[in-house]
Length: 426
Ligand SMILES: [Zn+2]
Image (cartoon, rainbow, N blue to C red; front, side, top):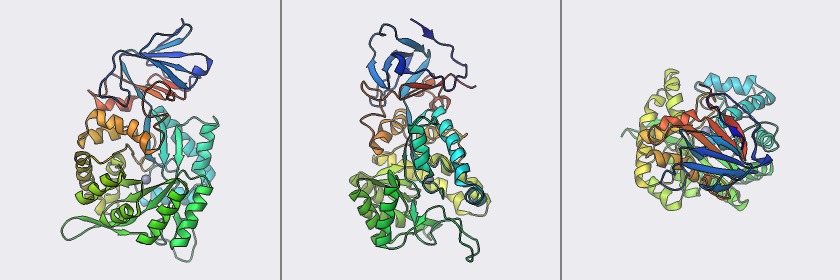
């Protein structure tokens, strides 16, 4: 039996693969994404790209990876990212990427983003629009699937939709025409057509921006301007469901949330200020909440400093909504809006915000594993460590139930039975 060990050595893209015979992974403990119990010690056997046994014997001839005092977990899943965006705290950060970077250059930067995400332990991600880079996310997904570049399993939303006047870049002369960060769609017929076009070009999800321009009402509550009319939004959802896909809706405050819930969207993104009555409607309709706490905490100070004062107010609404959503039992999936912050910044910071906001460490881990897999409709193959599931497995040093920041120090990543990362770079 050959023993592969030596932790704390950076070994990216090891080429170690269970396609060439079984690999047994040992660690002090395991969280399987399903049960509340921690399994200790842990032993997982992987053959080809599948988990074939848990807690059994090491098969003859298997290579053994012994991770020592570490915790094995299902590969992490981020259900809200933008791989074509490399940080947009200020308006200028955003406009520079749209106007000064070709789509080819943005694709190259995206290939780096997905590699960093996989190294941080994210083996699946849902990308929620390319911010002006058209269908480039479909190409990045294809490059990953065909083994051209390493990266997580992707579902992509392509261009997203808003209405005329509803999405930036803004503030340029009306005499010049220039690309916007989304497809602008007005009217019911155009809405249906845009859905058909995006799905025809490879969209797994339809993403809508249901509101914009956040402001405070006299009573101190947060409000917004809705983008689509109720009829337009209903047409988008109806057409998407007719084509057997799902709708993700950016909705921050009551006007956008009410339209989204009435139209029957499948996921609400950000949801900075969701009143209790709407949380209850979401729960009753089974609509997911994807809070993206990390991005807001990251971008809000910079945006407020730029003169957009409302951004200084937003984090407190967000924290309050998150805590109420947890208490009321709304389905919550882990999603960070990575890309709004740079990809070097580890999106696993979200775990800290989630536990600060009232989730137990186990609830937060489940939000990023089995719950996120349910949101993406891949729970039959991903999101838990179970026999027969895909071998997407990560490890963190120590016990993340005692120190949630351990999830920011992933030191082993296997995706599809292939070891991508083995060791720490600290
Ligand atoms: Zn986003």
